[in-house]
Amino acid sequence: MEINEATWHYIRTHVNDNVRDLALRGCKDTSVDFKFALQQIEGRQKSKDKLPDFYQNENILYPPTVSMEQCSSTPTAQYKASLVEGETFADLTGGFGIDTFALSRRFKHGYHIEPNSALSELVQHNAKALNIANLTFFQSTMEESLSQIPNVDCLYIDPSRRDSHGNRVVCLEDCTPNIIEWKSTLLDLLNKS
Image 1: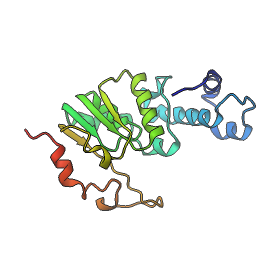
Image 2: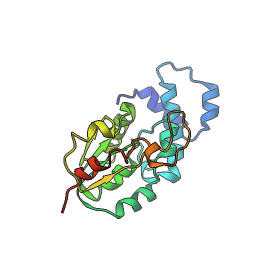
Image 3: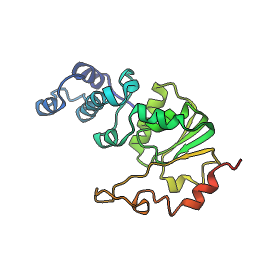
Image 4: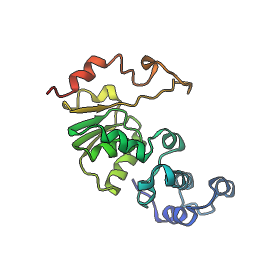
């Protein structure tokens, strides 16, 4: 992920400023990736309470607001990860990677699956920034990646609870991915001990 110095400078200079005010003022320096800079400033501000470990690391890059809103908080991810451990895991709905990173501390190796290429690239960058080296990344859907992942000790799946129009859904079969439809394949992917 290439970010020029002018963009970094803008982010550092305005990291505590009101994002809406910045957006209204605009930026005269055309070498600044203004949209990206605003996204980073807003993400960093939102991470202060939700993702304190990210907030402390100036090398972290943040996704658009929707991904920030949907991701687990650091304490929530750490709690979920505390419930499991083993050799390998796969986060089949990786997203911004907060749960993946927490799980990576409890397993020797893990897999992060995310179909959005920009988000997957961001997560890979952040893994390096956090010195997490025990992950393999797949830029694909859960369904596409199942044949590429070896058997694992733990599967983590947090399906999207929105339909294609952005409306909330409550039934598992209406979520994306539909884990009911893939149940037997998912169970076959688990190591049997």
